Length: 343
Image 1: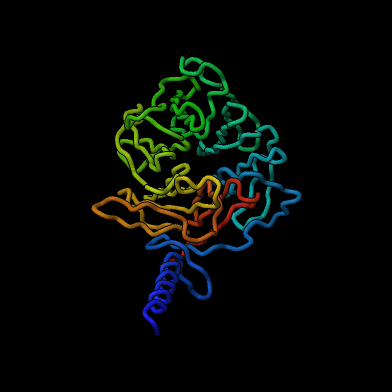
Image 2: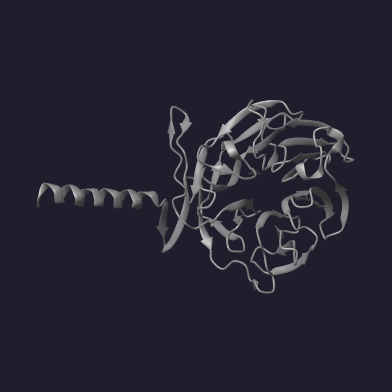
């Protein structure tokens, strides 16, 4: 073989092997296994037993599991904003026709449970009975003095304390975090746009981290590919950097933090996205359909999608049996995907 031909053929082989290594899954008993280490999953095919023609979804934004074990899905399809499934994918009930911008879904309460919903089109957020009655509505927070008009307030997520106090993330608006007391009265405002560590850009999600003592807030800074930790009174504590991962809301289950990654930077118009799982020490232990975590001097190398299973994943739910559900935005109006853990 001539030297030129050898170099060309070798290059093809090397490129091919790189592509093969980029597909970060394994085959077990004829099925694809996604993820690494202690968090590995197989997809449950055709999980939802419903007809998209009669039960349409648009963007599947977020999910929770209620005390009855039902999987509750929020979509901005006004034919059925809130959809209840059992864990086998059987449709149980639907409600809601008034949330064209349905985005954030948070479950709160023990014996009696409530849903908190944000609407990015109506510039409001709501407290609802789990079966659909709207109990309280919040308009844009004019009392802060930071909002000249309602359209600047585009709320994306809430987090609720055990005592019923509310943290509201204005993730598509002016990037402030509003803290309300248990009666819904404003107590504090922090965050906002800017270049300091305490500032936020696309504060898409927020959750209360019960793994820390005292409890803290974890807030998405999606544009800067990170989560930021704050005290419960709004003091900045730390940044959890996740380069290459435009993360959606943080979801904590046990000692782990799960997040859907909508895309990598500069890929707005390209099908993209993966799921990322961190342990209590903020180390990435598993990535589904994305490049495996690689650390250099304790700093992560940038992530990117490796397998085209997801198209703009928007939220993750971990149920009481450790099954994983992933819903997606702008993905052809598909139902959420389900994955079962592999031991």
